[in-house]
Length: 439
Image 1 (spheres, rainbow, N blue to C red):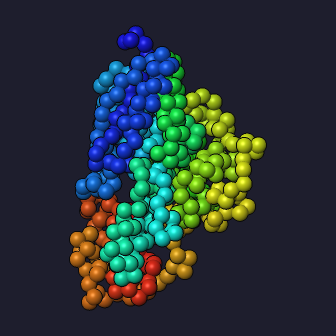
Image 2: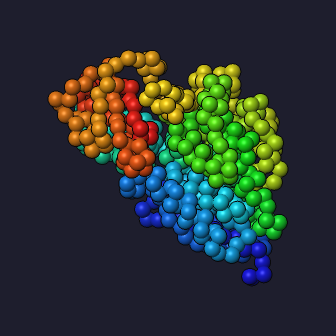
Image 3: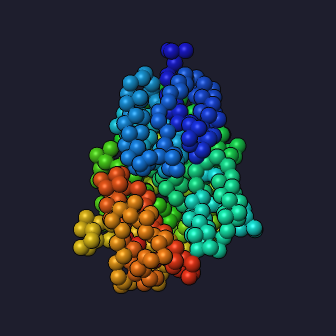
């Protein structure tokens, strides 16, 4: 069998990572696809990162995972590689490592969770968990009910089912051409996810013979711009532009924040998913996933960019006869919001630029003047945010310092500063919040 092409398969399964709970099943499916195509599959482990259990922050570990992935691919004999991941930092880490290792690479996302339900309401991690936890802190939901909610927010294996970082990066991987059509949106528990993994194994076996296309041919200025267009149109995570910059950097290309801002002012949000809309990833998949979105964006994308299974991105645009009526993926003429998800800001507080996901913010706060209430660190925030004596009003601006790449360290998602408890009890749902952290 060693005379056959060898396809490496990255194993990121871990008891600590429920996002990747289906990874063992997907590995077997990829192996089956490789073997049915006449190649030899070889599975090897790398570290696995889960948001909830990563200390001090998953962003510190992303680069470690990228190095681990790169060095394991370099160190072992293989002609192509399949990376399997999904949780926020894992897909960008794997793509970064694969670009540097420079072997033909197929990306298999693990898929998102299916939705949960509580008292007739659809629930999804992690937008609804933050919203309902705020209600619990405000005293509107008691301890018994919040325990019930906690048990229903994550009803299956897979990544968060809202348009968070995991969903954003899976879509970016598909749009850039690293994964197969629909791979970004198939829910983790569905049989279709297993079939997609098997098909990915077949593609990897085919790539192993000519040794092409290499990741460097996939990550081009054109595909990077396509990723920025799609990120704006889906209501993508602010983490997405951080990861895209790292992916592009591995291929030797810059990400132009000014261009990203211009795109956001021209390309509106078309995908009606939380936190910018109302639906969840399984509904995005049912609506037609990335191929349907490409059809709506075809006029503003470069459809000549290559994709890993051959051909171009234009070959994946959904044909009109395959479309059906749906309300999750909107046309350009009827967007969810009139501009894209994110804007790049600059000024005396952030001379090198900052990012806001204004599609998920309260419109009334877009222009606001208020007194700064400053927290000097994450520990200071935790100590004082619920203090009844905290000098704060709904018109104030909450500011968190020293939570950036160095201070925390690793720029944690601490920018989602909780509404002070005494204001939450009065019904305050949103405030202007500034930080050097993320989110």
